[in-house]
Image 1: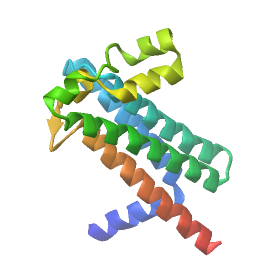
Image 2: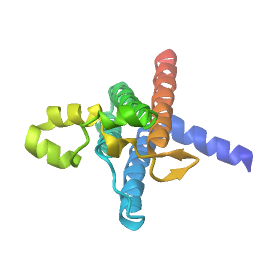
Image 3: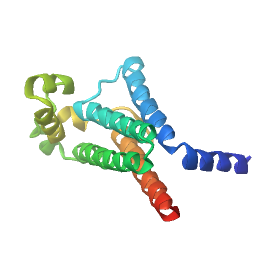
Length: 172
């Protein structure tokens, strides 16, 4: 049984890596949306921004599939993963601030899409990354909170992509 599972994982990693990355990123987004809907969770702007980065990873993987140059998709996945690590590490940092420090933050005052409408995309991202009290809430937790799970998944994407594309470059 272990051998079969191991062989399946190796086959997916070697032959269908980009597809697996795209599907997993979409499933993470769908799971987050379902939890918002059915568990009545209110995603803070940093959580919403994290979902967009997962979407960016999915699109990067699809680009890698469509243009048939795996290294391009790999570079895009790696860059998107680094952005995701930055966004989630910022949220983890905010969640570990003292109450006095959190009270001084004012970046997450309104939903992300509303910030984009009022301030434009770049300023909305800057304000969201500045953080605020809503971004400091720990919220739902299963071993880790949302930001920590996101950080873990972005790290897995990054490490797996680096391993995958360094290995391909060494073979060819």
